[in-house]
Amino acid sequence: MEKLAIRGGTPVCNRKFSAWPQSDERELDLLRQVLESSTWGGTGHGPMVMELNTRFCEYHDAAFGIPLTSCTAGLDIGLRAFDIGPGDEVIVPAFTFMATAFAPMYVGADVVFADVDANSLCLDPAAVAAAITPRTRAIIPVHFGGYPAQIDELGALAKQHDLAVIVDCAHAHGTEWSGKKVGGWGDLNSYSFNQAKNMTCGEGGLATTDNEALWERCFYTLACFGRKNGRPWYEHHELGQAYPMNEFQAAVCLPQLERLDEHTKRRNRNAAYLSGMLTEIPGLTVQELAPEVTQHGYHIYPMRLNAAEFGADRETFLEAVRAEGVSMSSGYPWPLYDNPMFDKSDSSAKGSIGGFRAEPCPVTERLCHEEAVWIGQNTLLAERSAMDDIAAAIAKVQRNVDQLQAVLT
Image (cartoon, rainbow, N blue to C red):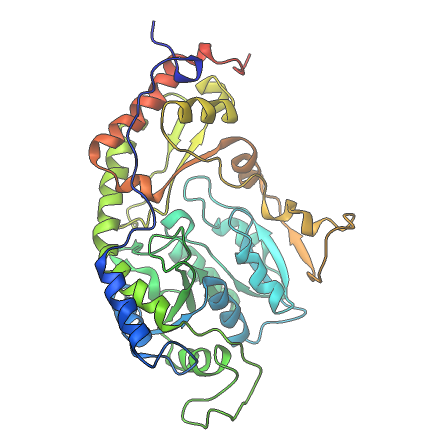
């Protein structure tokens, strides 16, 4: 009888998966060029920053870009560009990273948490429609894991209710909807270059838009001390932030962008192959791609565990699969609105967070507490045989689930 690795058996997978971040001589060469130049940073936007800006926008089907310090900075200036502030409401998904909700708080708006779709893990248009009130001014969809949010339905809702659409694209490098990259969809779309992201310089970001007037205000004013295009650098017209990207970040990002397309296609090939095998395993649901999803960003490869059907609770499942040599995560431990900062009875919670409201979010609750498991993007960069190992490890655990102590009764 085969023995699970968690019970002393031989692990299915003994390979090392792709390290992340990845770099080579291209990054080093460009970094040397910056060091040897007299232009390292500042709000003047150096040549490498502007080259990255142009090439990133071209690849992501967007007309204009704003290189920034982070994705969160892009969400912030996007809301400020529409003069959203105290008394306004902004709808965000309850299932995402906290930065998505921080942006409305920074401008003093009230945050409204809405539920997500169980398959896409993106904002559910029906939940958004139910959350809209006369005070709603914007929605912040997230292309979660690289799966594009329901662009057509959310766009129609925004148009119907005259809402700004500020998109969190932190996971969406290379993501396509109906054959077009998503960089030009929302009013403003903010990408992340954080350490873990599919394109990284450690920290940084870049926002895109097809609206020239919006771009000019964000690029020259809201991200650069309230200046205006064509006016003296010491002349300030409104409250602006200090958000510009520096030349060192751009020097790292340029080679990362060169690799992005090949990496994204490899992730998509491996994900499709892996999904074909995992669909045969009882109790595990893989993400189905809508016809409009012509390219997934695959920052995350998500699955949903049905504990009763699989035969083990999530934590037991994860421990057993990890013992077989496959790295997996359960993701967020709770919905955003259950974070300690929203607990008014907690005396340790500090800072002014304004108002917030949580709509019913049963899908998010199940995902956080019971169902969500996922594999990181770097795992999908491995050779195809690694996908066989992943599927074999999960299948082995399912076949021998009776060997686990914490099985369901």
